[in-house]
Amino acid sequence: MAERYWNAFMKSGKIEDYLRYRKEAENGRS
Image 1: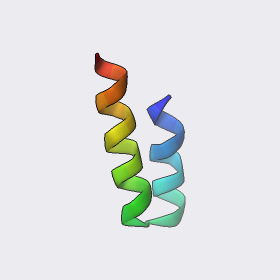
Image 2: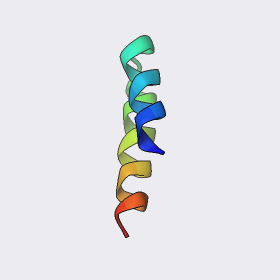
Image 3: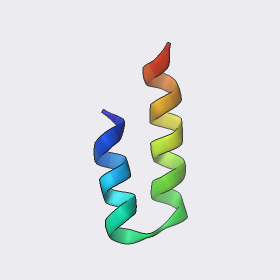
């Protein structure tokens, strides 16, 4: 689920975590 990547991004503030979230969110939509 994409939420855990979002939470990781909120904790770390790293762009890699945000990009991982975006990728996961797009995959989950299909």
